[in-house]
Amino acid sequence: MPKRANIRKHIPNMLTCCNLAVGFYACILALNGNYAGAMIAILLAAVFDFADGLAARLLKVCSETGKDLDSLADVVSFGMAPGMILFDFIDRMQHEVSWPHPFLGKMCLVGAFAVPVFSALRLAMFNNDTRQGTSFIGLPVPAHAVLWSSLVNAVSPSFAETGFCAGLSLHRFSIWEAGVPLPLVLAVVAISAIGTSLLLVSPIPMFSLKMSSLKYKGNESRYLTICLSVVLVACFGILGLTLTILSYMLLSIFNRQSE
Image 1 (tube, rainbow, N blue to C red):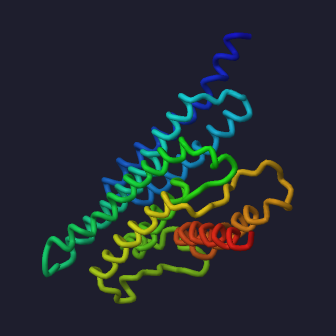
Image 2 (image 1 turned 90 degrees about the vertical axis):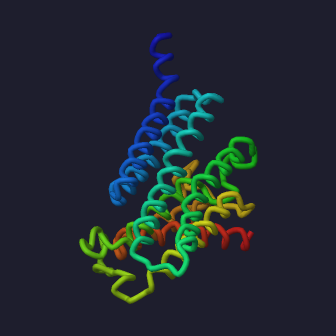
């Protein structure tokens, strides 16, 4: 019996290590330009991140070590990995641009650096904030990682060529075919990355998708987010994941104003 109890104690940390390993693999894929594979790895890391917390609660084996390990894994999976996807994307795309001053192109890379830096800041704040038991203050790092990994896939030229997971309503959509200037795209991406990274450490309350019960009452926003995600992904494919995170952010703000 003691041996079985010891094994149970390590299950959540084993799941967290799986999160870390998959996040590390996402970083490798990102630097090789495999954005789709990196995004899938980040989504898998999010599953392990959810599973380790659930296992810790069910087995009642929460510990300070587990909490610290979880944050370290999340920095890699939801900070470094999306940051590397964004860095590689901007770096590759800027070589196609004839910048008046090369320094302007390099400045766009600041957006990629903002993702891991503010993700680490948010996780450090989260570990020391007792107010975030059932809800979040600021955008959660897994949601931010999904936002950028899916958006980069949606706007990358490879997405336009293959139509990978384009969805029912958006077949081979491409901002490049629309004639949007590449320097403008990179500038908007960089500024947006800095803006969303600041949301990680913002005081804006965000509801958690974790449910204490399956009842609809009290979980309205959670069920609405789930239903929206299914519809958006079915209609818009990879871009639907981006739209799901944006919808989650808007619903959180709306809930705050209605309270």
